[in-house]
Length: 396
Ligand code: FEO
Image (tube, rainbow, N blue to C red; front, side, top):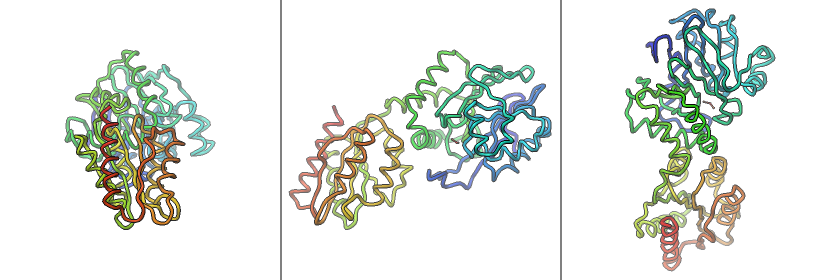
């Protein structure tokens, strides 16, 4: 293992997962990492563990620095299994360690790994653990990413370890922000925010405001996925504030669609032309060719999302069902939604899609637009005008 030193006595002992391409449905083209941190002072603490398949590598990384029996504390910031599923193995080897989590974390750990975790000690915001000259303190951060989530802050070294928050699914040889390509880094950071944390945007803003009000100095942000922010930790904090509050939204529409025999495709392209004719950016994303992970990232800075589906068996095309299930769960705020599509002897897709997003509380522009069988020149003219109308709504 190449030693990854954050500061004197503070090391990243986690693992880089170069091969993962599907993280519970999120397409991770650039891999990921599961970062865990070892802090050595008079006492030794391990902050988080890794995915179970990498337990052996974590043990090797820790053993290069100390014996596992010398670990006094294992801090569990978050129970999701990418961070905790090697805990049963590590806890057995680190037999002198106290395990520490939030109250919700304890409940979840017992449910995941059994009654032996009844012995966990719980902490709440503001509690501290003295390691010697170094002190750990905790900040509960429910729903960033699960109810159990908390941040650990190393006071003297000014290092915030927020687990999932501010992470990226990015495997790289460089482990710090100043060692990787900035465009790639921010691409992966926004994709991660969009696909993992977007539904919790109001809570993220509140949590950032809480940390700012506490006036705690931050030299580094060391998340549990991807690179560690040491050169410019505020870059990712400010980016989160912009994404969460819609500050990056531009005059842009995305058109997500699928097609059976080309009619809905034709409508999508004509709508895009109508939008572009008004000086507004439009981007077409065809399902079964574009992954939902990438579509969601495109939605972050779009003002309007137009969704097209042919009618199949009186309803929407199956790929649209998957997309709408995913996006209504992620709850992007402040977008204009509308729908279009072709049908044969009876419609259903457009009506069903409107119904789905209205039930999720999305803002819609009705009635959308439909064409029977193959769109005529007159119907395509209406699609063009529909695009123009969308552009005007974006410009407001
Ligand atoms: Fe990286 Fe919510 O786990």
